[in-house]
Image (cartoon, rainbow, N blue to C red; front, side):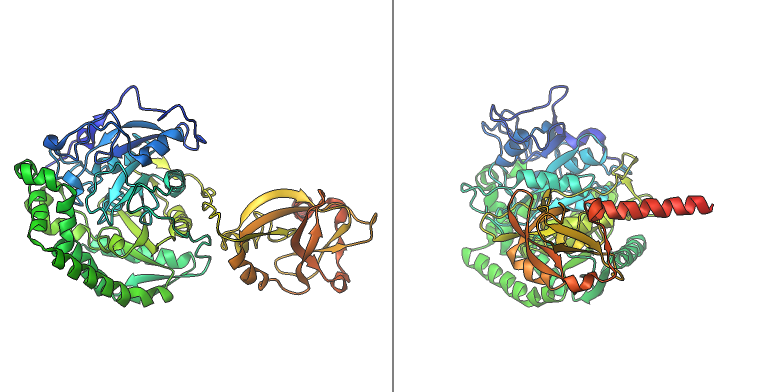
Length: 573
């Protein structure tokens, strides 16, 4: 049985996409980009169906998240198919047809955000919005060789989004690269006082670093799929090659948490989301969605509180794990099924696809699914990085590094993966204390020690120069090579190029602790008269040092060294 590519779209806007949301101009951060939205997200004037024709209605307002993207210059190309009422992880539970896998139409696309993933994987749009309750923003990404970003809960407003289980739902983002997905997140996030579950979160500013610890399930289950098992083993080795240390952990508590989503009173929240429609039109809901939602009718309020208590106990049980690891690495999906297989056994096989996704929102984690490999049978295999709430940017930094080593092309387009690019910076928390520090040598952007700044969430503020009262020396015997900046009597120095960086004050102490003698931190006067903390050098260390003041800065000196070295090699040849 084959899925139809046409099934990816419920409403397609061609050739006139929806553009600017209003007369108010935003910063146009997404200008020139096209996107699609899952059809449980409202767009004024377009029907919202949730893949159920009898439920269809035409909203008069647009979801907050879509408004923000339109205001940033992105163009909406239409609304995409999904497992009905976002209840499923396979993409076959829709009155509008089964969405095929972008690599092999016999296989499922993953769901419930099936159409959004297909549209991105096939290059029809630059990015797309899905929703994620149990893995709907990750499983389709893993099965279609694209990126699926599931943000920390509450970062993106869900006002105007039909809920599946509102207390744990998030709007998710599909893209072909990590930087694109993060760019969309940075545009979409904002607190919304009219969204009951919106919140302002402290976001981790520092990447996990060049040496990190990642948790791996001690006995992962691949549902008998030897190809998936082999690909995951290769994924673990790749993470280790990036500087990670793998630590095995017991997955059973997380499996118990995942089971609560459908096998406890927590399923009542799915019924609550569409109660008024379901009570009057249950026959309009297709199976097995109808049976799943109907389960919610049998539980009492006391049952719900019991289930919530059980979940909280599991959260307490697994909390110590995060003292040992920075993130988890799991298969995005443990296996891959054909559409025919899924329709023959829709409940059990769907549950299998969510084996490593269902617990994430329940336990309030962030997650990022990234492409990992193409299996020998030609199907994509993806992995998911899972981190603590607020670790979205750290996951993205590691996720891009991982994706860059994959050798994969983009989605199903065959286009080459572009070179790594700078990620959009973490939004500054106006309440977080920050301080500035100037660097003149090995910590400059692109230099060997710059990572000591970036891993602490520092950002480049400006390029400038010192006042004309300083001299710069190349210190002998330093590894990597470093300069020494010293203040000299007025009229005997020159302006020296430097960079001013800003970092969270909480990170400053650990940064300064890394500075080796004879260097230290002092106050330096800049060419505009301002003063800033900066690397300085003890004058005693200048014995045997080379005065490079005439070059105006360390970068110019290193370039001169490289040029001289190249010339020497050429002349020798």
